[in-house]
Amino acid sequence: MDAEPRKTPRKQVGQGTGPRAFNGLALDVRGASVFYGGTEKQTRGLVARRLIPFRRLGGRIIFLRSELEMWLSTLDGCTLAEAKTNRAARQAAESAVAP
Image 1 (cartoon, helix red, strand yellow):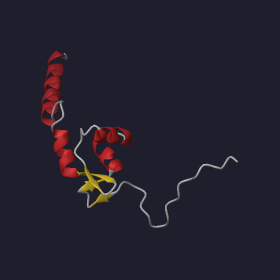
Image 2 (tube, rainbow, N blue to C red):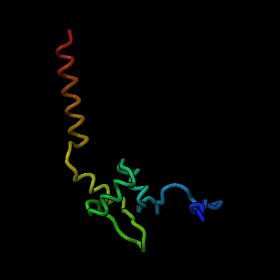
Image 3 (cartoon, rainbow, N blue to C red):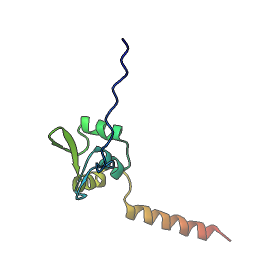
């Protein structure tokens, strides 16, 4: 008696298929993943280890855009201003070497 595996129901007409966004201020896991450039699996892992700011709304995980922006700004690396300065310095060095 091998029963076929149960399939998930299809979206009904009018139901959204993209990431959930509440006025762009709150995001679901997919929306947050797109926002910071990761995958949903990575985002869920960060939530499980409590390395990313999140909230629970019932059984859902939601992210506030402002908190994600602050979290991204605290990560190690160079800022946009530093990257622009470094690029300008490289271009100046290259133009000085060129005949």
